[in-house]
Length: 174
Length: 437
Ligand SMILES: Cc1cc2nc3c(=O)[nH]c(=O)nc-3n(C[C@H](O)[C@H](O)[C@H](O)COP(=O)(O)O)c2cc1C
Ligand code: SF4
Ligand code: FES
Image (tube, rainbow over all chains, first blue to last red; front, side):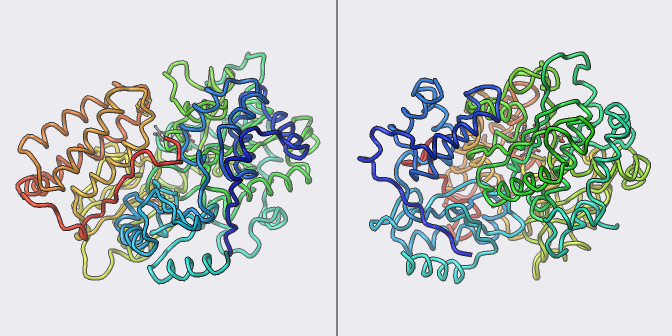
């Protein structure tokens, strides 16, 4: 398995956002699934995050305009959920599960090891923008603790050695 | 027990529709369409199937709450949020047998006369959302879904709706708000979703595992299903076993086996050199059990009698290396992070418990802390909040305070921080820069 990196569009290119025909086509398809326009908000935000890497204020305005909501409404939803990035993420976001089953099966060691190896604290990005560590809550994979999610992919039953090998591989590829 | 829900685990290419068909798949749906909606509901009622999402509510009964004479659309929602700590069974079903879930959704939707169903899946489960989408496309191509299901004239669309990171969206009314494109703020009940649900229409919310039982009930009959397990606690159940057992994972057993059997016979027992100290029987929101309570039966009623909950069937096993104050603090962090913030007792209470427990771990405990913790927990439960998340944090914490009182007292007496290496607690980072709230 190889995890695809996130390519975040730089903030200056996301100040005023116009959806291209592909994106617009997919938005229209999403709208057909629900009886209200508002219900397409989460799927449209996911679509934008896939395309741009994160949800900038410009993206919020464009989504609001497209769905006929106020930017404040859209922003309120974006910030309620933990998975929408409101600033450009690193290429690889290392989401370390902090909850009980992982914590008692080596999750704490993984997190401390990552902080030491990358020289940044949980919540921060490395200077080269390659890695970002995030502590997250139970990922629903507790039987194979400890678990780290990297971008979209789960890495389970991790040991320090396997985590190091993974980081080497990801760093080598970028 | 012959595997029912996990029969596809280990079968090559188990997710493909043809594999499912060759195992007898979609026969339940065929039969349901011949029986008619009311007979389907009757069969599920007779099976005594109870919801596998946490509350154990009788599934057939829930379906009968949908008003028959309602003129407009109704909806079925499959809850694949799988957010209760210690729970990882729905993912196992989807990984090996997505069509079993789709068939269950189709039969349930038909029973309540819904023409649209949504699968709400947690945002982190990207792989499993894709698996479901692929299975839906296959099922549609074969006529099991779409405008005319198997030529019966009944139409059904199923859409996958991804969450975006919020434990509370597993709670059915928060989930409904989330589908409507809002923040996941639970609604006051009543009205119950079966009457006023998503888009203001009658809606049934059922868990993945609950729905996966349905095709088997229709195909093999209510009596067959009810012959597994114990009276009023019928059928096979997936137990998710995590923590300090030799072989953690998902096991399928009849309801009513004991926790000792689950832990010792099916998960290899506690890891070498250690003994069982405590376990959460049904996800982290259930009151904790001690090693002395391991012979309790794992079913809804036996757990309730023992003062705990079967919940989602997430058995979190802790051995004698675990500091129970640390475990309580870890869970307090979780609930403080996940409280949606609408109700004061839950928002402030979970945070306050977290602060007190962290302070105790820091070597700055106070004699009155146990009493304060219990008081906060009392204030956040028993109907003082909009949704049961108040109880969900109060029950595990207050049960640890009561059942591990001496350990808590000695932690309070210790005037030095616990060595960091011993802590199962990780830092909760608070609001994360760039990561929303
Ligand atoms: C805080 C909270 C979290 C919940 N999380 C889930 C969940 O992740 N999955 C689930 O199926 N039910 C969850 N539930 C239970 C649902 O509200 C609902 O009862 C369930 O989906 C109904 O399905 P069932 O009748 O098939 O069990 C949760 C409840 C609460 C209060
Ligand atoms: S009990 Fe907690 S999670 Fe539930 S509605 Fe109130 S504040 Fe939100
Ligand atoms: S506790 Fe880490 S995945 Fe559940």
